Length: 59
Image 1 (cartoon, rainbow, N blue to C red):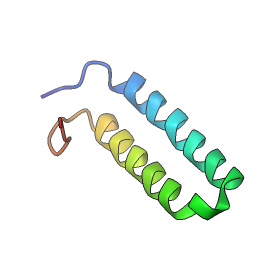
Image 2: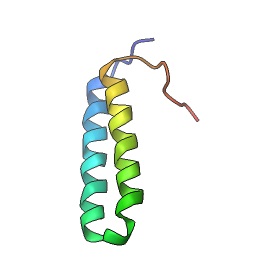
Image 3: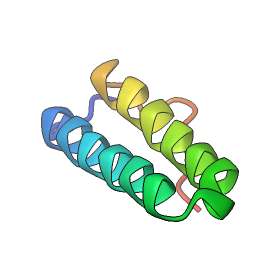
Image 4: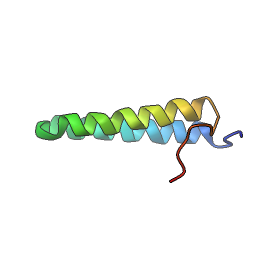
């Protein structure tokens, strides 16, 4: 299935990734957790750029 707003999703994911990495700089004790969240956003971005919903969790 094609994702009609894939470019917007990719943009949102990039914003969220940057936010998580900025927070990791401010809260080094949470760096590992925030990096994990940032990695998740990058995964969603890659899926959106592939314009496929296969493998995207809808839960």
